Image (cartoon, rainbow, N blue to C red; front, side):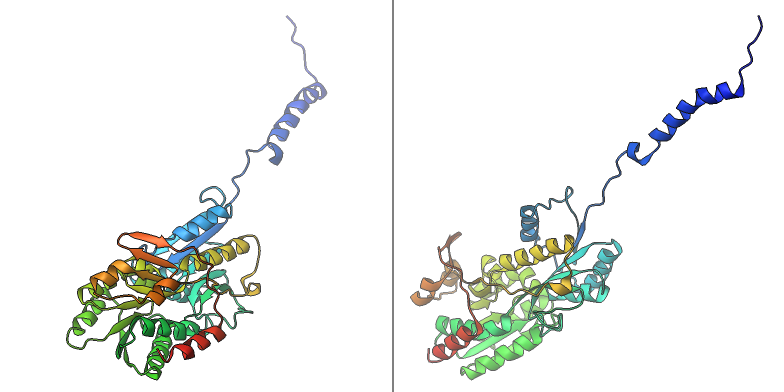
Length: 360
């Protein structure tokens, strides 16, 4: 049998469709779909004892479900402030798109770790501490929400005088490693003295410091104690409540978290609202907003919270006038929330209430 000889041009015509098909299948349009990178948020907190529940809930409401629309890298210092700088650097190295820093100490760590990654803060007195240049124009890579504890002092002291009208001695307990607290403690002591109280400030850094302070109250007893609430004191809120009941000592907190842990009374901003406002900013930054262009917001809800169970345990009768104004009254283990319009308080009304209450 005679073999046919295939000409080169005939071979080329046979191979051309096969080569074209191979090239088409290998083109980007036919390649498997690439996994799109999810936006990434870094969450930096002092300890898991202050859980990120409000942040997580708000992110879901904004249609940022973890693992589907967003990735979240959580870093908690476990109550060890020395860990915060390392954890902040870890978030920067993880190439997060924004850092959510909750509390003054985490904010300082995040601010020192980066000047480029946007930071959203939940802070106290952000201008006084130097976190931002101004509330209207924060500048740099940091914005968020700040409480106004310095402006709340007169109102808080008015509540304290109404609670304990015959008090003569006051102790302010605070964390000196939180940049906003030393000036706040000094101003509160000064304000108490203007009201005729013998007042002093006591520092704490650890649970042992708190225990030593309360032990000292056995021989040098004040009539009441004011806790300058922040992440570290919230982490020790149950201990503060236990010691205050043991010593039968009235304790006032800046945030309701201290009362929910068993403390007596609080007056201050609604913490959940502050976290929700900050989370809104984190979402805006993920969509392209620049932190320098987002003015620092302030809380609008302020709440008076009273724990009647604790009052009973320490032998204190709460004045009816305070109970009537309370936004939340905790009786035994059941919390009764009053249906009230959230308080919106200006600096002018703070000062007005302060001078009106001087005669209490």
